[in-house]
Image (cartoon, rainbow, N blue to C red; front, side):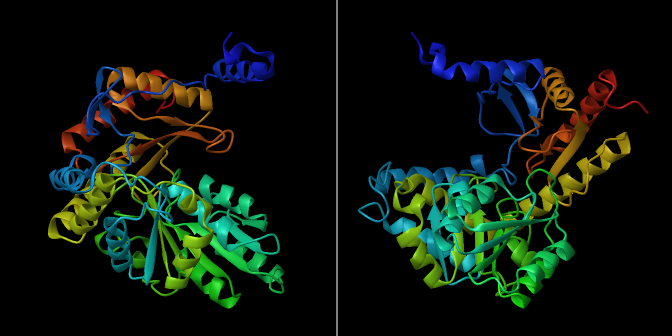
Amino acid sequence: MTATSRPQLGYLHDALEELKAKGQHFHLRVLQSEQLPVANFDGKNVINLSSNNYLGFTTHKLLRRAALDAVRKWGVGAGAVRTIAGTMRPHMELEEQIARFKGTESCVVFQSGFTANAGTVAAILGKDDLIISDELNHASIIDGCRLSRATIKVFKHADAADCERICQESAAWPGKKLLITDGVFSMDGEIAPLPQLCDLAEKYNCIMMVDDAHASGVLGRGGRGTVDHFGCHGRVDIQVGTLSKAIGAMGGYVCGSAELIDFLYHRARPFLFSTGHPPSVVATCQAAFTLLDSPDGERLIKKLWSNTKFFQRRLRKLGFSTGKSHTPITPIHVGDAGKAHEFSRSLYEAGVYIPAVGYPTVPEGKARLRAIVTATHKRADLERACQILSEVARNLGILTA
């Protein structure tokens, strides 16, 4: 008897059948090649518009070499949690490098961007405190807020006026207050109004925290993120970034004051109870930040933005709704989740891979495909992808004009 056949888990079968009935059930597509602009998923070569590999770092020769050299010198694993025997010299060197890159006193690396957000919020706040959060913040922020047991008040997406309304109503709050936002919103590609939010944090005595996962390696000088993009250095208390997207490897990090990082060493549960990064991953990240700070890194960021603008202009000209994105994240709005999944499946068969995104990742009725171009896409790839998108959308009645 299998676990799924036991009556205690019968509700899972019913839930999956409901997803299938709505056309929202999916199977994981298996990458059978390197993470490239044209890649092999499930045995089929397709134009890959689904990856967060913004700068093509997952296959960059300098990062490959750094990983291999680190394995030879340091072995394949840290062997323990960071607080016992798992902090190796490369871990400290990477954190020092990231802190310099972001212009902060200190940095701590977590095992993922998700745990960086969730672990930090849950560590620094408690049940007597208040969190003021954008309604479209990432799930890792939402989970961290819940774990903290603080009171949560949500302001309308990217709406500084509504945020101030909550700040005014909560001006006399007796505990600590945290104002938190994504720097770039992962489903819509919009950039947060960070200067205005920093103004509010200062005016109403809030801790200011930004999750810059999708801005890292994309916005600001050399990809330093939204804080650099807007010139808000010294105004953001906690900066979260990722090592899993533009950096090309895996992990997350938190930057801030030396005391903040020291406190997280002692109280952030994901850091306390997870083994340190393998040396190969650490070395890969070090090579990535070195590359970002070089002319080659700047060239890749410029190519990323050139490809982004070209692709988005072509989509809008074809009649697609791409929302208010100002970044390489390009939503292609469909509305109905079943239709979005059908669109994605048909595109795959025609040679383009863009996954559908529906509830609960986005609200009901706001399903879309989320496309991301990279610096390594060729213009011909993007031209062909737009042609296929148009043909498939018209066949499905998504585009009618």
